[in-house]
Length: 113
Image 1 (cartoon, rainbow, N blue to C red):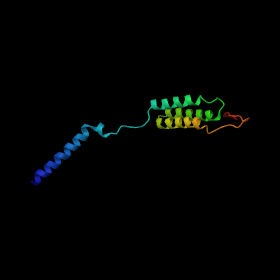
Image 2 (image 1 turned 180 degrees about the horizontal axis):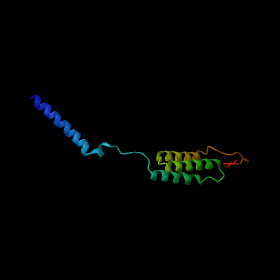
Image 3 (image 1 turned 180 degrees about the vertical axis):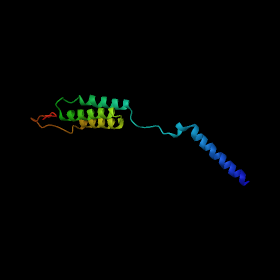
Image 4 (image 1 turned 90 degrees about the vertical axis):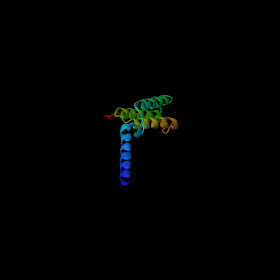
């Protein structure tokens, strides 16, 4: 009787291992990581939103900088960071975090200035 229990347990263990080896894809969860397509869609949406502001608006300027960084992150294969930067750009436009007072102008200095 004792030998029967050991044999049964050993065969059950081997059957369980065999099922795990036969279907390894079933054990791997589906990734929720953003893809290049997700990144491109987020950037396109944020860019369309940014174009609703005038070209000299400070929030549009910052949103466009966020979009440039999003494209850099996408080029590095960091699609989650790309989507995050595109979301920052959208938030910048929606909330208009940066505004110039009347009479003020945005002066962007070049690299040599």
